[in-house]
Image 1 (cartoon, rainbow, N blue to C red):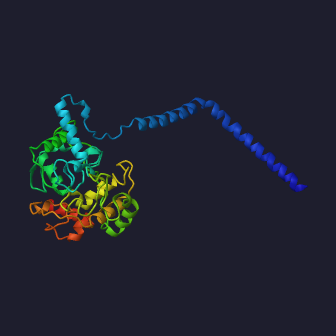
Image 2: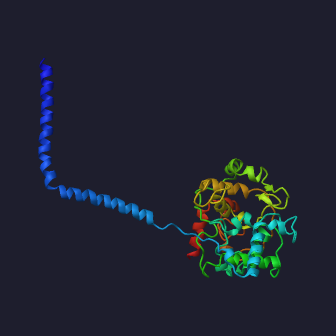
Image 3: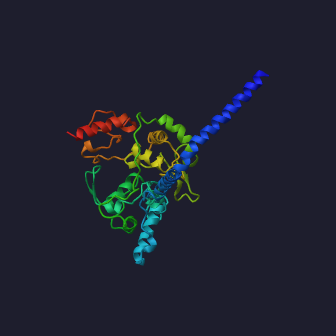
Length: 346
């Protein structure tokens, strides 16, 4: 009985304390009701302004190719379209079953320069017209577009150079020049070439790369890297990544860093710079595995006349530093980059 009475008293005390608190707070709310209302309104406005700012923030704008359909001159338009077809279906014209010449390994230019050289960070041609002629350390000379195109044909297509005055070279040049005509001379187009990729803090691993290849690449490029030909055998649906019909060891993609950037932002099929499917490590390891496989050799004794200008991942000596050939091929590359930077600062 006594316990029940104490419980009732405690409840009454709690109610009294609650009523006292209301009596104390209520006058404050009445007196300062305007200020309190303004405070919450201003907070809501700030939150709305932050949302508005985020929604109107400009997104990155990347280069897109000039529209071929805008060409009024029918002769020029026809030439540019032929150039595009040569880039897209190179093998049909220059491959083992080529209709013009049989001078290449059967790969297409757009196997490396995706979407006929127009894909953002897909090794595109956005800056070619604006930056060429330009000095290139690999040759140690000023190169024009003809030289650059023939370099690709001789290295990536493991073929023979085109006549610079011939119909096909003129069409290729017309196409590359036109699609990049919307970039100011001397400026680099945003999203052109390949997107940068941070170095690993270790060497890229061909062993780990093989496991990635089996899971993510083999179904298209085949177990032996030979690629997949179309039904007529005139060009590759999926190009060979090594072997006799792939790019030779003088090609730009033979450098592990270039191949890693290429696959990171473009592969497997359907990937893009803003929707990648490979991690950074997978990209480096995959590049190491593929570039460790056999492929044609190109003798290039005139490359890199100034050996101090060789990229950190150029895999052939002599070098201006003391790092091994293996480290120059697979990394880690940051120590080499640091050494080069130190040497250049002297």
